[in-house]
Image 1: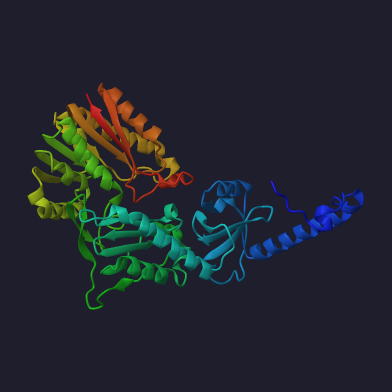
Image 2 (image 1 turned 45 degrees about the horizontal axis):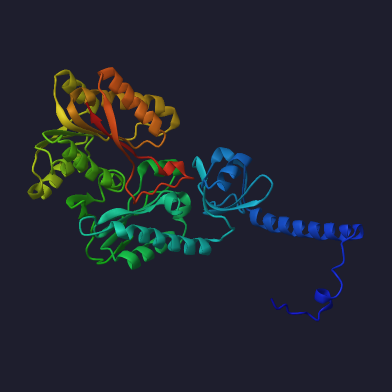
Length: 454
């Protein structure tokens, strides 16, 4: 091996001088100056901002994105008498900068982290556009001729807290669910990205009344965010899921218009009914606009959908008519309370080969979990009483606070009370356009058990 010899005294001459005790004061002085400069930089960032508890700081360092109002020790605003800023620097109780968050002064979720750095509004808008384009790119493989609807952006799961964007055919629906998203430039940035990436017919905003109340958000404008043709005010369209056609109306329905998170589970229910031969008579409880019912109608002889909402069943009937040529089953809809109807039917000996239970969220808070579990057990108990041996039970919960263990225990208790042996064939969650982030347990909310009942 050839080694190049240096002429430098520091390299080829004498060895470097050893540090002595006399050097220590100078080193300590330099370290102190560096620390003071760092503290001064942090202080400049957090002179206006939020200081949070150690517990909240530890959660953020572990990947969590929310800070609850109860974990804020102090907030310093530049002009407290004016409207609070959309963005706030966030520091721990030692003054160490943790990043920048969207600020919601009246919400229990007061801070939603958007960066690990100190950023201004212009930088945030650049981040927003970059992340929204990335979110859309992740969904493109899910879209085809038979599936032209999906969730393009799922809030924290796509690093865009409070922003939800859904595609229904040629329409795009946006929800701004955090007060910080109402700042100047946010809507314009979203519209620009959506136009460039998707070229939709229209981009609409649809508020969530419950979130708007919690966040104390103003009522949004009724005008579209953008129209390809300003003379055509479009709020309704058709979209496709698993090859079936559904009606969409931005001015009605729940969520942004449909339950896109169940798309893969619709197909799974149809496939399992076919595999198990549970196709003579099927029941879709809390059917909304007929998602599970119409998929089951492709393999079953007779399907009944039950929902308490007359308006939802009207849309379900419209969807049935649109898809009639592709369905083999006789389909009927019943407007009724699910608990009352299933109790009556189970007592009167009604029987089905496949039953889907897809109720609304029973537990929107932790305190409601105990009551929710009683509701889940009751619905599953009634369903188990009506299922023929070898039948299919698809039971769902969209309550984040109800864990997998909670749901399975409720179904197991119902099975014990009805003396039915229940075999778990599959655990399922939300469709891939609703990604689960392991550091954010709230992103895993939908739970679906596919069960064979002996």
